[in-house]
Length: 287
Image (cartoon, rainbow, N blue to C red):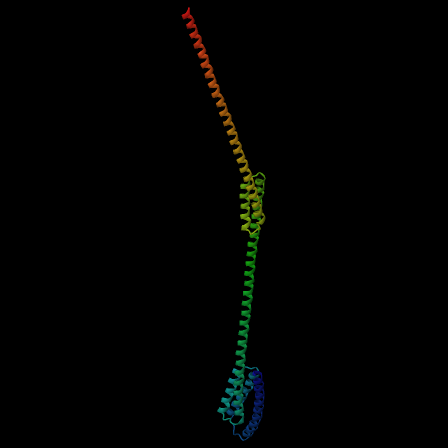
């Protein structure tokens, strides 16, 4: 739309300028007649020259699109020509030229405003683009930092898990030694410690649980065997005790029998001695 208006204004300007030239030629011819009749003064002629000189400069300024200066020059020329009494078509054409320049100036101002708006929008778009790029770069930077931190955490976690596994395996080695020594309780405690460590790092512990179960079964079997052995020992001890007690009682019985026999023998011996004594006494009496 602005291009169409510019084309129309240029066409009108050329047309008006052409008409102005035609009117100027007519006026010049009329002026020459008046000069011949000596009806024009030198001052009027000088002002006309000044006005046309100003118009020529205004035409140059118009071609350069210096609209403010061109408007000022055309307006000055119009004032000069009005002062010396110019009227008619030329003055109308000059006024049309001024109006056309005002229109072109308005169009130029609009183009300038539009260009400024376009440049402002371009600058805003570029700034927005730069802002988005900066945000994207910062986001990528933050993401890389976060990823680096996550990787570091992952490495630390992997190292921790490896250290924990090594510690658990060392404890299991000790538990195996204790198991071979038959120290089932201590071995089970060691396996429980290893299981706890591996559970914390979510390492499979089914094998350890199975080992603990087997050790507990073996320990239970061992406990039953020990209990049975202990019961046998107690039974044997009781039997030995009973046997010894029987022997002691038998010996005590024999000893009592021996004592009773000795007492009887002694009594018999004492009786014999007593009878012998009584016999001797009797013999003494008879003598």
